Amino acid sequence: MVIIEVSLLSGFIMTSRSRMLLENRTIVKKIEVKANVVYIYLEKLNDESQTFILQLEQAIPVKNLKPANIKIYDYYQPGELQISYCLGVGS
Image: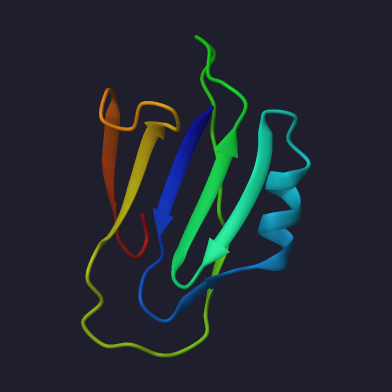
């Protein structure tokens, strides 16, 4: 199982439409939202390219936003392979 861990930008929340669109994908096993982090659990990855779009809305205006992180890792061996990205406004 693979986990995509998305730290949301301060003041932003994932829309319910975005969650519904993700849950309808066959590769997505489960979605959890805890505080300002979205966890997307995938059955497995293969050689096919995958694109995941999260629609966010600003719930609270925040000045001087700092970039957020996206991590992708194996649930059973989190230290083996980890890919990290940086997310900013307009990314």
